[in-house]
Image (cartoon, rainbow, N blue to C red; front, side, top):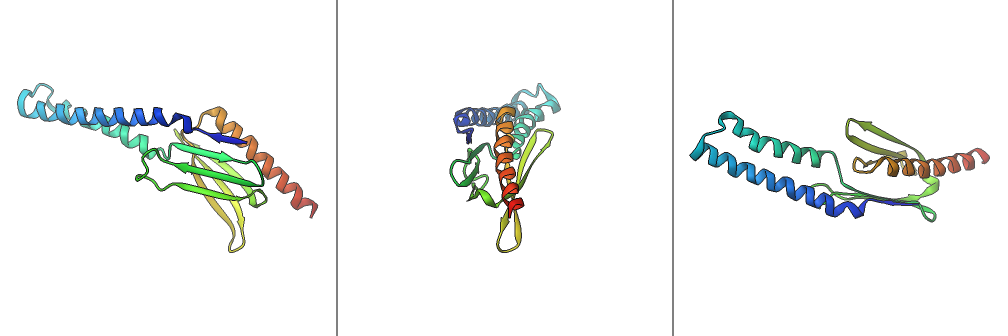
Length: 160
């Protein structure tokens, strides 16, 4: 199964650009208000604070692009930001038989996928992916696909 929200990149870029323009316009409006007009008083700080707060939240929620591929004998996970220098791109590929368990944690509007994988060195490795920008349907499809792999692995381990 393949899952990707790469088609939403133009929408995320548009929203990011819009927020940057609002932030820039807020700075200009703040400067004009302080130097020339002085109409808004202390409310003029909101011209900077509100767009900046929304912009920070947009980027703190996590990486916007998530790609998952379970076709074949390996699982592929990619997680990246629309602006490459903000977060490092995560890219992991491992055989399906190494998947032990997974967990999706949702706190307010932040959603994370935690994948536990067996490794030779220290037993298990925990991989973390940010899936806040996936829709409910995409998340449920991801759960179904990962559950199939986990159940198949448990059956193989039980038979051995």
